[in-house]
Length: 317
Image 1 (cartoon, rainbow, N blue to C red):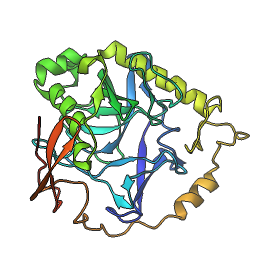
Image 2 (image 1 turned 180 degrees about the vertical axis):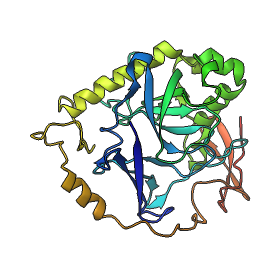
Image 3 (image 1 turned 30 degrees about the vertical axis):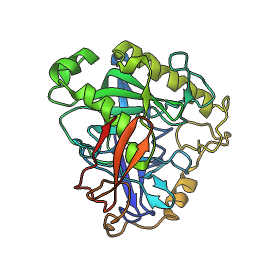
């Protein structure tokens, strides 16, 4: 099973989109049409790469758009970039999502005490290769972290690409701790701090910030797949989510998207054009001191002049 992508619009602009196609060249939704399992018998999952490691653009599956293309998140009309919170450069893993999963905002998790964040479940892929945006890879699940983001459950699956040269050495979360010392601690710190440059408080975590093992992680993924099945079968409220798909729903379903409708939707977007320069202002990082700002239990320094090769520093009280 193979997938490809088609770029539309100008990279680094509000018009940019990345649409998905299957092996037959048919437009599909990466949220709904790509199977969750790559190999169910071996518990190997598909992962849609939204953000390649070391990059800053906050790209994500557009869950509210027809065909759910990947696009850059926008805040107050401006493209979003994550800051380089020292010592990390952009995202420290290949970051993405498992298709056909959904963290139901109407379901309160028994372990976290919080409802889902209304998105597919997130994945941090820790292999040696820097993946491409829109790449669909097969991953082996190793563990999971329960982040609480502004009162919502936001699971972070830790996984490795099955094609990674070191994949055979990683079979559970303990192997990450043993073979990549410091990586899990850095992951917690990254997720704790990455919104601080936006003036938001640190994120919190369930289970005393501990990672749960592979078996626990797989059960969480399966539960989010069940939530997705309820969503796509209209047994759960979709709200603003766009559930139209070209491969899953039957022809009489309101969620069925015909090939002509999909082609027309892509055709309404701008053709792929020249890459725009990265904006000179935005939430990327900072390089000149301005003033200290209190935020939760953190004291940080707000800076101006943003650039992806600069760092954001702050210290805990």
